Length: 123
Image (cartoon, rainbow, N blue to C red; front, top):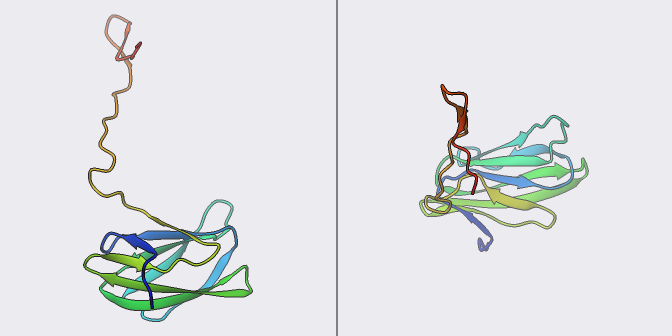
């Protein structure tokens, strides 16, 4: 089994999504990971969250579009969470490692006691 695909930080949640409805999730060892659908307003159920619980290897399968069985291999260790890529599915981590996006958010403008607006960046 090759895990050279998508790597998240150790015990980091991942999202798996595609354009079809995903149903009937079965996990081989549910003490290692938890997998559950994200339900949206449109109720399309095309997105899953994979939540690692402890180190180990397991698999999960699901039905895509109520007919195609899709299998994912997952390995969780102290260095990361590894999920095999599968055609037609995108995998994305939910957490951003520290230091990737260092930025500050400007405070919103406000009206002072004199009735003038402060905090606008007119540059």
